[in-house]
Length: 234
Image 1 (cartoon, helix red, strand yellow):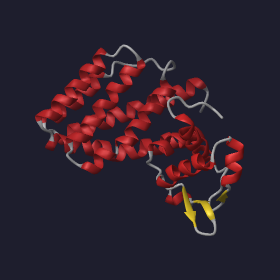
Image 2 (cartoon, rainbow, N blue to C red):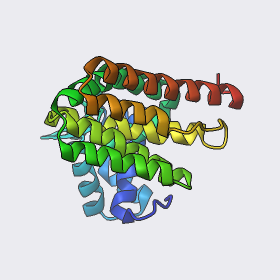
Image 3 (cartoon, rainbow, N blue to C red):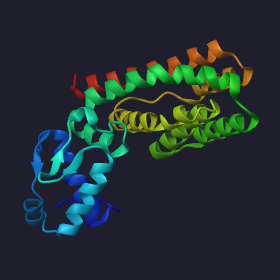
């Protein structure tokens, strides 16, 4: 079995079965043989069952009387679950990135406009703090963390709990974008463009906030496309 840092045996089994489900190795509506998995992975039945419970919570499998554990149809999967997104990226990275980027373009500019109307002083302070982290970042990891903090703060400033939960999409796209772009595309200073969005939110200018957010998303995807061309992926 492969080693997954910090996950332990239980986590490793979740990862292995999850990847097989997403790639279609275990087909939809097909039955999963627990005895075979136990023997193949050399783990106890308890570990396999507990792993399948985790995957059931993500909508991937279901335990049915007389049929055992069955793979659920893809339309019933929780596609916004962080682990499912991660496995999907491994299976069909560019397609998944494009789909998530489209979703992001639908809600983030609107969220920025809403944040311009609803933001409080605490929201502005969090956005400012994220910008300071961005400016002080010296490593790709620090830059990615600051970027995520900023975009989370924009969502939080909307005061809409459902929009805040969309941070899973933002985090997944940022992580994959940074993986693709890192060491390939020379990064511009991200502070001015993010500062423009903060200034628009602070000023309560909905249209400017929407435009700034859209410009950030367009730039991010342009970097991904440029990196893919350099790598020869497109």
